[in-house]
Image (cartoon, rainbow, N blue to C red; front, side, top):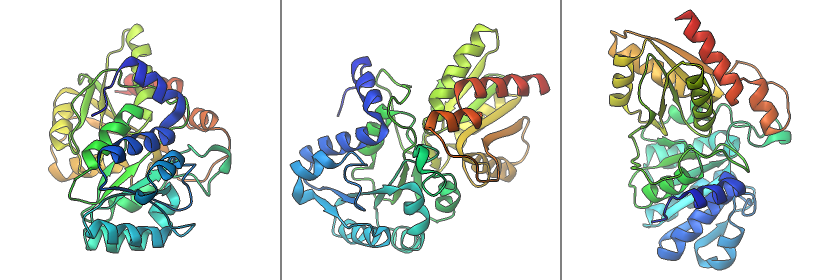
Length: 325
């Protein structure tokens, strides 16, 4: 188990989410020869360059063949290995969607499919590489667990929880280098159990992935202006922590779901579906994500800014919704 400290958090932040994934998996592979990394020719891009050199017997490069990668990973998982297969988010969720559906969903093989560069993280590579629709695709597959770590420390927590986990998991990695820090101290992490960062308030924000950090910064800024905002890290998008949602709804007049994903089919949709099913919702739910269109291409920071998903944009949106409550 890796210790979460301020020093570690800063180091991981500098190298970013993908490099932290490779570093973390290397550490777990050193302790556990059952851990296998499979890559669709993205060893360096996924931070697995060191892994491939130090543990060549635990690393497989299938080449640029994402569909085959999922099939290979499923065969290894059926043989009893803890398999982590990685490629860019749109290729994992859409190019290989049929293989994910059959091998991971229908057959239930416990592959851990790691979606690199989800959201806008791929920057100037543009819409062909942005992962903005992946949750909508993956949420529709029965039996698939979906986890999106809030920061680099939670990447470690997620991988540790996934080793030995008997179900297929889609791990959605957002963020880039200099990833904002959410956790500087150790905390309890469990798949399917959301983490309260700020207690539920009249306005409570629900988020997942690296937008959690931007929401935290926005909430801290608004607190200085006298506006108290709750914040829930819903790291497990499927299955949702329904108990945490009920707690938020019992306290809040407004729930705001913030995500680096299309407004259709993502975390916001999952939350709305839950409340539509249980009924008797005493608060309103607002979703804040990517509108239904393909947008511009630019740096990661720029794309977050123009989408209103950086801290300033989120703070402005919260203030607007608070005024309308």
